[in-house]
Amino acid sequence: MMKSNHSLRSNRKLDHIRHALDLPPGPGTTGFEDIHLLHRCLPELAWEEVELSTSFLGLSLSAPLIINALTGGARDVTDINASLARVAAEMGIGLAVGSQRAALEDPGLEDTYRVVRRENPQGVILANVGAHTAPADACRAVEMIDADLLQVHLNPAQELVMPEGERDFRGLLANIGDIIATVKVPVIVKEVGFGMAPQDSLALVQAGCKGIDIGGKGGTNFIAIEEARRRDTCGQGLLEWGIPTGISLLETINILQGQNVVVIASGGIKTSTDIAKCLALGAGAVGIAGRFLHILIKKGEEELKGAIKVLKQELKMLLILTGTATPAAMKNIPLVITGRTAAWLRARGISVETFASR
Ligand SMILES: Cc1cc2nc3c(=O)[nH]c(=O)nc-3n(C[C@H](O)[C@H](O)[C@H](O)COP(=O)(O)O)c2cc1C
Image (cartoon, rainbow, N blue to C red; front, side, top):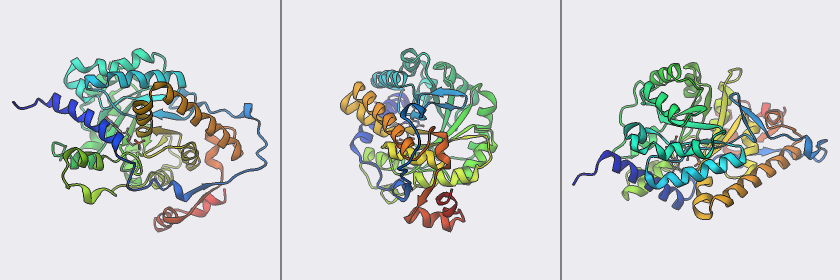
């Protein structure tokens, strides 16, 4: 008997989790190894003066941190979303659900997403849909979980390597503009691990989106995941495809100077130092998906809370060690950019010296 679209999608969601847990990040790197912060031995700050809490598109977070879109849409993942929601609530950080398409097509699956709002009634929750979604369905996705913000994901590389994936990428920008005009919450457009070119970031901001999550290369790799699912070799030649997170962030921040928009850094972020580097590059917040999923599934909810507590504490240490009292102030500290990232920026006419001498 042929499997229905719904059961194929449910299987795919479980496969994505399984392979994301099995596969290492990469093979490409984020570029953070080329970005260096300056240690300050006279920080002139006290621990109590340092404040991690952040205003994020008018909402309040205890630190500039989001658990990025992971799952929903299969009954077996309801517990994962429930755990992520409790972790986000206790830690005071944002949480995005996975693509809600499954529940838009089958209302029987709504609870796999609604659980997030039940477990985290006061927190900052982000709805998630693909860029092809009809504006009325995007509104339903937001209402389904009483979301504060909407993420619209762009994932052409993943779609192309999926045999059942989308093949027509025309009209997405116009549809995103229609979604923005229709939904009642601010819209963030995100990539899923291949980065954003600056001209795409700029076009999205001109279409009215309030946040850009550059979702760069160096962490979860959906070409590798799709290839592992199919166990064939189509896609292997593309395993290094994408713009490293550090570079995509730098290019996007550079082109969006002066625009009223939040840039979110994500893709391969693991450590507090990675987070500090992203803030110094100008990110307003940082999203982590794969690493948090890993800790939750392999070690449990309490371990994930513990890991986030450590990230926040270490971030506070790094603020002091760079002489800054808030995450927002980090965007003014000197940053030395070396290696391939510096060569890339020079080739693109972006001044590395401006970062080093600020
Ligand atoms: C198992 C899994 C499922 C994901 N599902 C979605 C999704 O439904 N929608 C979306 O926008 N991103 C999805 N992502 C992508 C993440 O939100 C993130 O953009 C990507 O994994 C890169 O970040 P990372 O390196 O921290 O994992 C998923 C990631 C993983 C690991």
